[in-house]
Length: 454
Image (cartoon, rainbow, N blue to C red; front, side, top):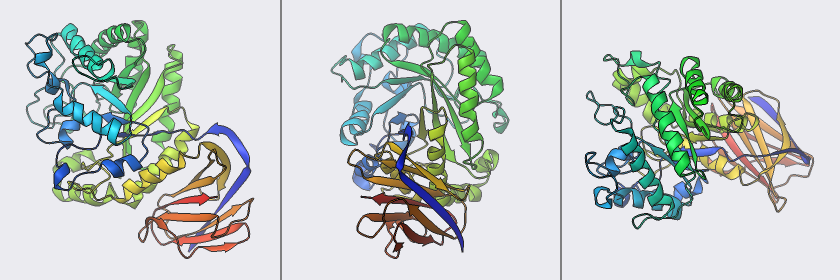
């Protein structure tokens, strides 16, 4: 069995805080709550930075919520008449997320992805000023109490989703993507017009986008340059990434984005990687055409231990990048989610997210090192002086862990919770303590460990 040595120096603070980068996509579902899909409490335990509301209707069949076309369904009616809006589903959805699950909301203004042959609601809005007014009334309903609304502190408002960066059009035989039927140039103009007006009306809120398919030189630089040339607000730049190397592209692109933003005068613009997920192989064409492969991906690979270790590794490494927030896609029971589909039963990826939600409760970062590249460690301390480590082992195979600290470790002050084939973030009963050292083992290909030291 291979071994890895983790060295913890509790006496040395790094000078940087452990950042709460663990946003997620979607809120606790409305649909099916009384038939085995109530996830409010386990969702709360994830301790997410926020829940991004995109694709909410897909997770809630029969519920008209979040999307502009659901809240304001008859586009020819007067946008200033409250009778023409249906806030009912979205009111409950956001209330469940903020009040019951204790999770802030990040609101995507636009439409959910449309996988149909005919695309129904993803054409560029024909009347942009009216569309902006509708968005303004939605913002006011949820932040200013308009029309028997709320005063929620929803800070982030994103304009559309995946209209740019769509260099994967070759996946679709008709040449159409699933989120925007216009051109990238049309979207850039639409974004500038919308963002400028919304920022004028709501200067205290953060307006941004474009939730690009990925960071793509041919789209991202054009979008940011266009925004700069037209002096458009860009409080945050958002993009997406699906992959299988936690040390590669998903860690490199934030530096590229930061450099590009700074070059165009957006030095204060936040970077949000607000859709990301483990996707081994990245074969989107096969995912769409091969039902056996699709079943394997959704039932095993995308929710298993490799996925759990991937996500904890990614967010641990992000601590030393310019990323402001990430949002895992998704934190509910969707095909890409962290619960078994159509149930409230957590998967390994859920426990990986939960482990990261725990380490951020120890924000004073401590010096910690690993002897293996594929084993990352993030260590911190809380206000009471208690310490914690999150250890992520991505595709290492069987491994023996040896944790050495500069303080005594024993069963009374050190508890290890392991996520592997035999533990679902459960207490390790057979750890071996000796002075300042503790050893434990995992026989899984990937694993995560949360170590608490009092």
